[in-house]
Length: 144
Image 1 (spheres, rainbow, N blue to C red):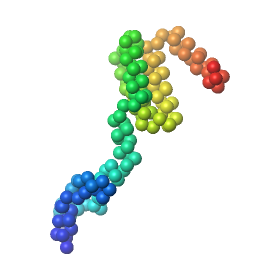
Image 2: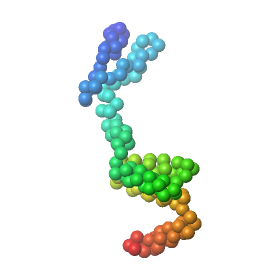
Image 3: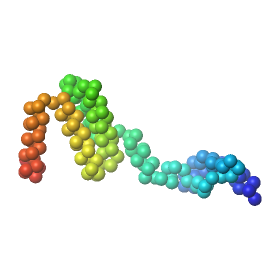
Image 4: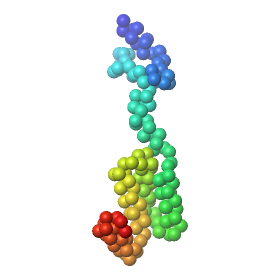
C-alpha cells in the first residue's frame, strides 16, 4: 500500500483550478510524502497574495509622479547621495499607493515621504514657510 502512495506522489500533478503543473511533493527520509498533497498552485491557493505581488511589480501613476518629482529635485540640485533612503522610501510608498489607492494610511505615508524628500535639501526659511502653511491649513480645516 505504501508503494502505491509513493508512486501516486511521483506522478506529475496539475493544479485543480488552472491546470498548471505542481511541484513534486517533499519526501521524508523514508521516501514518504510530507504533509497533505497540494491540489492548487501558489497563485490559485492564495489569489490575494498573488495579486499583490503582481501589483507591486507594476508601475502606476503615483510611482511615475514620484519618479518625476525625484528627477526634478535632482535636476535642481536639491538631492545629495545621503538622501538615497528618502528616495527609496518615496518610491516604495508610491508603489504601495498604486497597489491600494484607497488605503488612507498608505496615502498618508506617501505624503509624508514626499514632504521629507522635498524638505531634505531645503533651507531653514523654506521649512518655516512650509510649517506655517501647514499650520494655517490645520486651523482652517484645509479650506484655504
